[in-house]
Amino acid sequence: YKLWRLQNQTPIVELILVGFGNGPELQPLLFLLFLVIYLAAVAGNLLIVVLVVADRHLHTPMYYFLANLSAVEICYVSTTLPRLIGSLATGDRTISLQNCYVQFHFCVILSTTQCHLLTAMCIDRYLAICHPLRYPALMNGRVCCHMVAWAWIIAISYSIMLEMLILQLTFCGPKEFDHLVCDFAPTNSFCGESKTLSIGTNYVSIILTLSNFLLSLASYACILISILRIRSSTGRQKAFSTCSSHLIVVSVFNVCIIINYVVPVFRPPPLQYKILSVFYGSLIPLINPVLYSLRNKEVNQALRTTIEKLAAFRH
Image 1 (tube, rainbow, N blue to C red):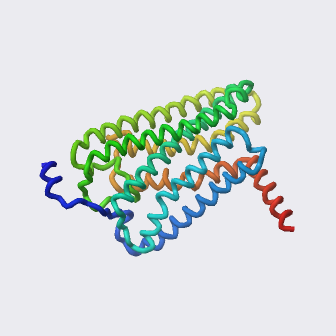
Image 2: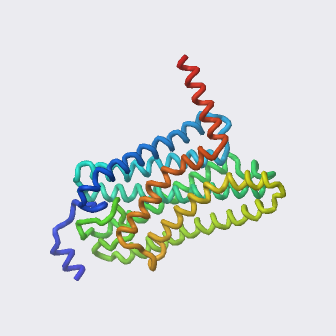
C-alpha cells in the first residue's frame, strides 16, 4: 500500500499549517497576542544579553549561561513566531516543504541547545551552593565555554542525524499540517522505511530529554538538601531565591517536552499539543527575562547603571 501510494501520488511541495483553525473572529486577537509575545521576548532577552556583555559585574558563569540561553531564545522565537504572525495577519497559511524542513531543523537545534543550557545552569547552581569553596576552580571560563560548545555540538549532531534519515524518505502527506510550526516528530507523514526515523527520533529524544531532566532533578535535590542545612533563615531564603526561578523554567520546559515527544501514552491531541508548544516555545522565552531580572538584584543594579550611563552620555 505504501509503495502504491508513493508511486501514484503527486509530490507534495507545499503544506498548509492549520494553526489555530479558520475562526476569523479570533485571528486579530491572536495576531496581537503573538506579536506582543514576540516583541517582548526579543526585547527582554536582548536586554539580558546586552547587560551581561556590558556590565563586568555580570561576567560570572551563571550570567554567561543566561546570556547564551537568551541568545538561543531570541533565535528560537524568530524561527517560529514571525511565520505564525504573518499567517494570522494575511490568512495565508501555506509554506513550501523546503522551508518547512529548514524551520524544523532550526527548531530541533535551538530547542535541544536550550535544553542542554538549562541543564548546565542547574549544574552551575549545584556547584555554587553545594561546593562554594571549590566553585571558582570547578566552574571557570574554560569549563563554561566547553559546556556551551557541547550543547551546540550535541544539538547540531542530532539535527544532522534526523536530516540524514529524512532525506531517505518521501513526504506523502497529508498536505494540511495540524500544527503551529513545522514539527515532523509527532507525525507519520513519510513514505518508505519511516520506522527507522520514528525509532531514531523516539530513542534519541528519550535519551537526551530524560537524561537532562534527571540530571536537573538530581542537582536540585542536592541543592535543596544543602539549603535545608543552612542555619540562618536569611541565608536559606537567599539561596532558594537564586534557584526558584530557574527551577520553575526547567520544570515547565521539560514536562512539556516529555509529554509531547517522550511518553507515547500521553501524546496529546493536536489542540493540547499546540497549547504545550506555545508554553515552551513562546511563553518560556517571554518569562525568562522577567524571572531572571525582576527578581535579581544584580541584574537590576546593572540595568540602573546602564540607564545612568546612557543618560550621562546624552547630557
